[in-house]
Length: 395
Image (cartoon, rainbow, N blue to C red):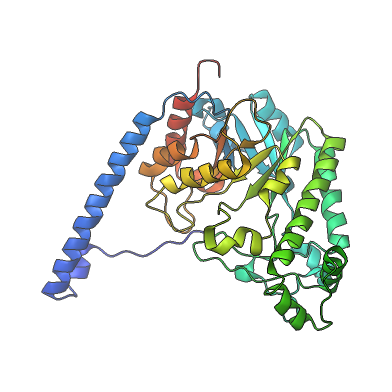
């Protein structure tokens, strides 16, 4: 999902501009040079700052089996990697066994609320907007209604099948939130789900009577009863997590249950993580082992501020009362952006991003994503350099 911008040389630009424009271009070039020097200095400082970090137990990569490493006659351990995340649809018995033999943990990613194929045969499972009609997919991200009983059964059955079929060390919920496109600097988060089932369940649970007209009911739920509506929706998504946990405990109890989730605090974007996405992390915590916050700094509008990663992780720690201590039940393992998606992540920034991504309360980390990194091998080498530096003597 990355793009390439065509660039022109300085001479080409100058040949078509006035002297004033050439002067401005020179200033811009000087600023770019200064920015590059600053980036390199930050990179060197980060490299020096990364010392053994015994609290970091997991050094992972997300996005599939890294066979390109093996094809080079090397192993993931040569790069300090001890864990991988693979989409549940890409799991293979032989590959799992191979990476287990190499000493790696193999975790699966599970698509919770974004199985758009289900809607092709069950269009009534689409999320409903305030106008009473199916909500269009924002930026192509098609969610499914959490109130559709058939879809819920479909996801739980598939979740159980994955756990039964594959010898995985854990499974992570992905896209477990309401119908939205938030993985970008300017998100699009439509108000949903005003389905007849949802409105009836809301009335049953709260005792609040709603008009029969969906637009009129939605106006009340987004206004006068906003807080009650938000909590109701959050509770539904939390209950899904409860059921996932029950299945995991009954099927593969030794496996970890994690979640990939939005990196915003409850104060960011006017509380959108709850009001729009229906994510209540403290409520979900009783059913989860690992929280993998997704602070993609470049993608989310902070390309020059990788320290944002550490700030968001610290805020999550405060929210969940986690400090990164060994005795804590829940853990925070951020997934951080190194592949280019939206804004470019330069190789000079890799060490700095990993530095901020592995500060406590984090006790593990993974990099996003292998398909992109494997095409930029200097980044893979930079990840290896940082991961090796983090290893402690008993690792």
